Image (tube, rainbow, N blue to C red):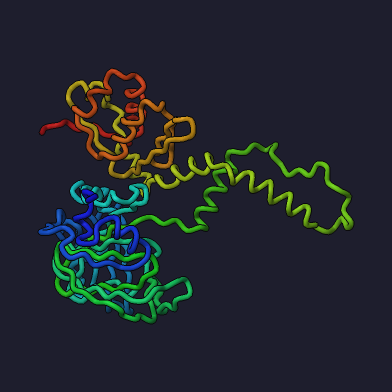
Amino acid sequence: MKSEFDALLGDVGVEVFLRDYWQRKPLLIRQAIPGYTSPIEPNELAGLSLEEEVESRIILKNGTHPWQLLNGPFGDDDYKTLPERDWTLLVQAVDQFVPEVAELLQRFHFLPSWRLDDVMISYATPGGGVGPHFDNYDVFLLQAEGKRRWRVGQHCNIDSPLQSNPDLRILRDFECQDEWVLEPGDMLYIPPGVAHDGIAETDCLTFSIGFRAPSHQELLVHFTDYLAHQLTDDARYSDAGRKQPQDPAAIDQETIDHLQQSILQLVEDKEALATWFGRHMTEARYPDLAQSYIDEEADLLDGLNAGYALLHNPSIRLAYRVAAGGQVQLFASGEHCSVPEALLPLVQLICNQRYLSPETLEPWHQEPEAIELLEQLFAKGYLLLERDDE
């Protein structure tokens, strides 16, 4: 049965893509979005790079040293000194600042939305690129304007040799295995660890839709930190009933076995793991920016009664989970709350729809628990009021 997302993946479709390509091998999709027109112009992207709260970089292929990295925010004068070619501007999380870019993410909901990271946009002059490299996460590279030549190479890992560049992780060896020129609407999927190198053939815009892939180190450190904060000081090592040691200075196997069981009992708590994971995967990339949307003067009920719609704060991530016993956990920006099972349809709407029309919200106006939940999210700036003028 065809999915509404199949068209994005061309002849392959979602089922085959997930089975044969996702996290396995690259895939070129010609005209994934036919006739695609970028919702942001290069000069607007450069304008974002002037802002303090926006993460941006410029990479010069031939600067004071090969592959020179400059970090933003930039000033107008910085652009006046750039050469005519061989440089790239990269701006992170453009979806948080341009709603039309954020709408692009809806096309990728055949994958868990909590895995989505952001949309990075790069503008490159002819010859511009970031050098051959590999990422530790999945990325879809959508060509939005101009032409870019992509070369795809070998599988890499932490031991793959890098150039002696002080700023960038550029591969010392690149073994090209496939090569294509992408035009507007074309898209290339690159799984983790696969070397790739994009070089602009004309002035061009490329959208990089990245997916979060926490390292095992990150998962272990953050989960154990979370567990530690849930424990009281009187939860301590215990060896009641132990035998007399043969050597009091020796740490014997019985001690290690007992210690291992104590730790395993802590980490085997699936409910704690699920709660932590939901909080961790929804943490805001820019917490200060997320907080800046709080409107202490507006009243949610007055707004809803006046015909306002609700929309997501673009800086937050949302997810939900149905826990044991039917209790619903809603995760937002690294926090969570539990709500009754009856509110599951509302929670699903909140998590899946960036825009909640007055008609969508109207059935919930007479539900006190629903209004309480919306007010909590509104007070934290996670949901925003906007009049529905359509």
